[in-house]
Amino acid sequence: MENLLFLSGVFLFYFFVAYVLISRVPTLLHTPLMSMTNAVSAVTLLGALILFSVPTTAVERILAGLAIVAAAFNVVGGFAITDRMLRLFKEKEAETETR
Image (cartoon, rainbow, N blue to C red; front, top):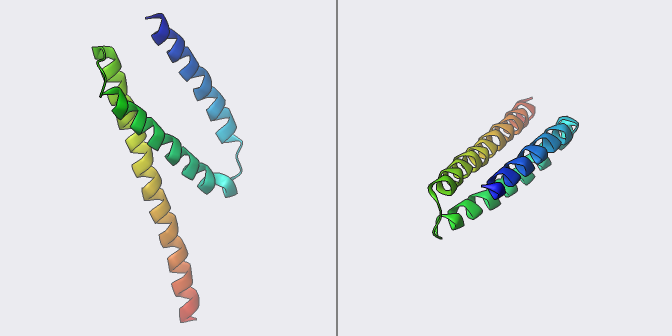
């Protein structure tokens, strides 16, 4: 139980540190930052899946399940946003070719 409290404290600390750092990133750097968060989410997915391969308690399995859902949401959202951004560039290219 002490480990869970300690890890929750570490999570909350880094959550706020990350929030402060990301809020100060210029908009031009959001795409590389998004790529980095997708990579971190992929590592989180792998870690949570590995956690299911060893004997764990119910609380650990629930936390691993939540980590999988949150990381998968971030990865899928990152791909969706990247696809939307790429479509914006394609529309501009099509407009300039017709002129």
